[in-house]
Length: 256
Image (cartoon, rainbow, N blue to C red; front, top):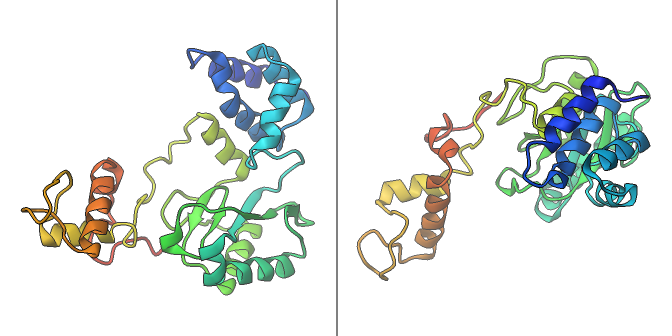
């Protein structure tokens, strides 16, 4: 497949967004994937040409990061976290069930081309373990049964929405967004939910605030629970999205 003039123009656009154009390599590779379904030899050569790098330099990046794929992907990428916490909470069981149900192994695509299954490393969503992702969007608190229902819905072309994010499109469309081209779905769904905001709720109930330093002083947590809650408060206050999340209430979160 030859990259279209439109895609080449967008690659140049990405390179122009950075003071040092080689900084655009990561989003450029995601754009290549969004068009070709993987990082192809032609995509590597064109990125190298635009950024004035060697193909070896570009290949080194494309083979280092696991989000870059060197063979064609299915319409949807389903990643099951099998890192420690998710694994012991059921991630291993989910992965085994999906392999049997889809009749594929790790990093393989179903015969109908709909789903590529992969076990993935920690997604920093341990408070919702076990989690899996579809095209990099989170599905929290999964079970083998819910995971099977999810992939069946994807294969049937049914509308699916992630637990805390946007409506699921396709892996290629998600890759285009990661490359830096918005799809208008950024405000769909809360990005934080009850479990992530528990520390913030506890801090508010106790009147704790971030930034106090005197031990035992007003507004300073003196217990282990309080210290953890203060750390959560500092993090939450620095993230406007968490403050504005509709899940920032008792029992919050999305059940979609």
